[in-house]
Image 1 (cartoon, one colour):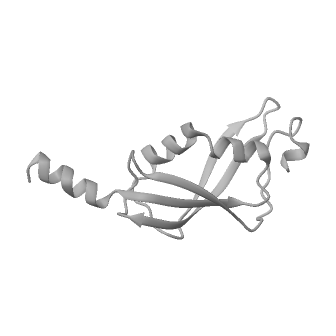
Image 2: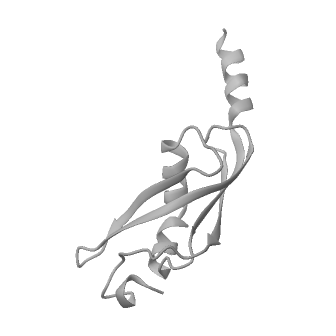
Image 3: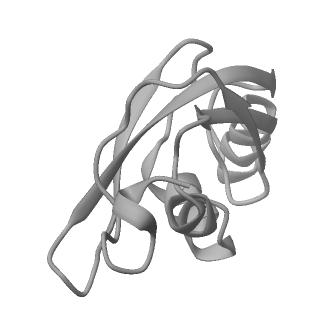
Length: 113
C-alpha cells in the first residue's frame, strides 16, 4: 500500500466528532481542567480507537495540597470513523453524578462544586 493510500485509509477511520461526558458532581476546577484545549489535545494524541460506551479514568492534576483528581470520562457518541485524530472535535456533556472524590480541597470546597 502506498503512503497516499495509507493516508486516505487513515482519514476514513478518523472520527469527525467524539462526545465525551463527565459526571455532574465534577468540581468547577475539574471541569476547567478537562475542557482546556491542552486536555483535548492530550485525548486526541493518546486515545487511538474510540468506541461508544468506553470509560477512561483520566488523571487531571494534583492540587497545591496534594489532592489528585481522577475523572471518569465516558464516550457517549462517535461520528465518522473509529480512531481519534488531530482534527477530531471533542465535545463534552454532563451525565448523572457518580460520587466523584478528589479535587483541590482548599480552593474548591472539598473538591465539590
